[in-house]
Amino acid sequence: MPAHPHTSAVVLDRLCFTWPDGSPALDDVSGAIGEGRTGLVGRNGSGKSTLLRLIAGEIAPASGTVTTSGDVALLPQQLTRDTGRPVADLLGIGPILAALRAIESGDADPRHFEAVGDAWDIESRAHAALAGAGLAPDVLDRTVGELSGGEAVLAAIAGIRLRKPAITLLDEPTNNLDRDARARLTGLVTAWPGALVVVGHDTALLELMDDTAELHDGTLSVFGGPYSRWRSWLDAEQEAARRAEATAAQDVRREKRQRIEAETTIARRRAVGAKAEREKRVPPIVAGNRKRAAQVSAGRLRTESREKEARARAALDEAERRVRDDDAIRIDLPDPGVPAGRRIATLNDGDRTWVVQGPERVALIGPNGAGKTRLLERVVACAVHNSARTELEAADPADPGVWSTEVRSCVRAEALTGRIGYLPQRVDGLDEGATVLQNVCDAAPRVPPAEVRNRLARFLIRGAVVERPVSTLSGGERFRVALARLLLADPPPQLLVLDEPTNNLDLDTVDQLVDALRAYRGAVLVVSHDDAFLARIGVGLTLELRGGSLREGALRQGSLREV
Image 1 (cartoon, one colour):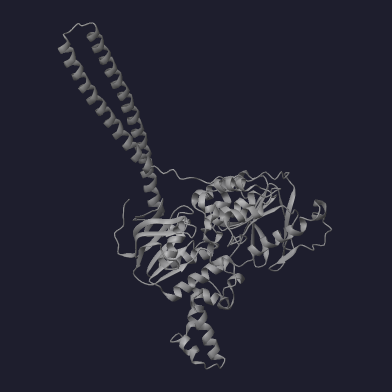
Image 2 (cartoon, rainbow, N blue to C red):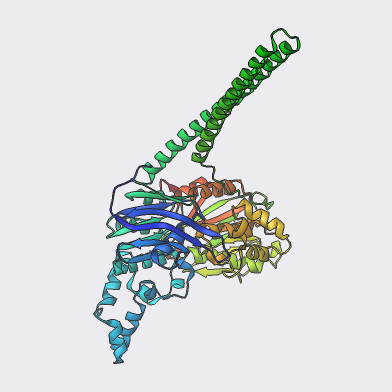
């Protein structure tokens, strides 16, 4: 692989990490990451997030070493799940800010002055950092749970900028970010001071990188260039590998055929010699000499044939190792049996009502903090009540809307079915301390554990991973577990409510999800900032939530067009 010459910011030497259950996460990984901008790619579960945590010093390797050129800051993939964490702590200034405000209130405890040190302007600097990320100053006094997912990510990035580390590690930084926020992140990344390593599946962001590093099959390789150049190189390399494999397989077949022909020749010569000896057509001494010569010739011929075939098989083995045969997940969403035109849910902004019906794909878009996630949560909350009501009662237009809930001004949502499958943005419906198997079995108590294991295997969660605690999973693995829980629902959901479903997913898994959603015969209500994904799943209605109201629009080349 072409390598980019640079000074190393991170050096990995035979790095190994093992989970508490004994299953390996990384095994003998070596390599170097430069001082520029590096995009780290790899399939879900390949160990990218674990590697970042090792570099940041959050976890210790079982063996091997990590050497860094300076201090390290990490933006974790799952930071939005810590909903009670103050934003000030997210920025890394919580104790300093608390001490400063204690002093301002008249508390002259020396410990406060010690905590503040020289950082008397920390609050103004924090406000400036938040403003640079497009956030208001009052965000500083809120918790992560009070922010949207995108706002939390931007606040954390602002905190890293405030600390000015030598090495910054960003794990899926575009998760939950709207278009404006992504544009701000692009500007920040382009002018980022110090070394930057970005784990992500956002190809636009990966195009800003100087180098592309891939973690694949326990090996870290670095390519000098952005994602598109690396992808082109990999595609060309794999095409050449497949051609080499085909040629090697043909060589094996040819050498095997020639070996069989050689054995046939040897057998024929042996038969001729034996017949001549029986018929005494030559003197015994001559016959004996001929027999010994034939044996020597046969041995030499067999040896040459075996060696040629062995070399051909070795070449084939080497060619096969070059060809990647990565497993792909298989997503088969159950048929909920929703008739076309069946009313599933309604959305209303006071002036107009939109009806979600099956099988329809509705996209809900809008800026970070507009209330999209809260609106989805209200739809799901309605389903809890409606599941105990008859379909006629749930759909009764005279219903005063006891279960309808106002979201950010006049927007109301009501579910007309209790059969809803919900994949939250934070993927926080899993028991962190329980194993993967326990989580899925708890959601499907009537399904035998063997069937649950089979279902998980379709999502590439198999072997020891099934017995690992959910807390040890990557974001993509967590999503697959949550999806497996949803697929085992009985009866199947009539409405899928998806909040940023492509977060943390590798590109191959996104492809599988697209195919599954296109084939799904129920209704889909999805929040996403990924316009390409929305277009691929066949969204027929796009609603933008902004300023407490809805407006109808359509996606076109990444922008919203008024209808």
